[in-house]
Length: 167
Image (tube, rainbow, N blue to C red; front, side, top):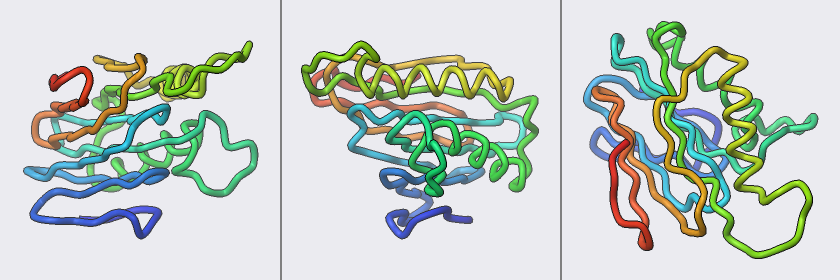
């Protein structure tokens, strides 16, 4: 088990907690979890053939020179993918699921909400990396918690407002 990028990541009984602006990679029977996804986007990547999975909790769409790679969609996706490859994933087998990207606050902006921009950036970067998005649970006005099961690629999404679902 390897933990990446911040001291907010904790492991408890085959569960790895991924903090805000963080990511983690696990395999086999292990599970990745994150909570507090509002406008942030959760990017779940998995390779069913190898059983390697990764989860990122990105806060903003573009780094623009900032060195905290896990904080931004455009820098965390390549880092997460490389970490998965280092653990045995085949990039051609990797698929993605997205969750989060809510509009948590009302405001006027021609650029859209942070949540909308995070989801758009995730779609763009995943497309650039040639990773297919197979499921999404994005948008709305509610927060989410996620649990990614490495062995199956199941992404369990929990929300106080929208209940539970698996994508």
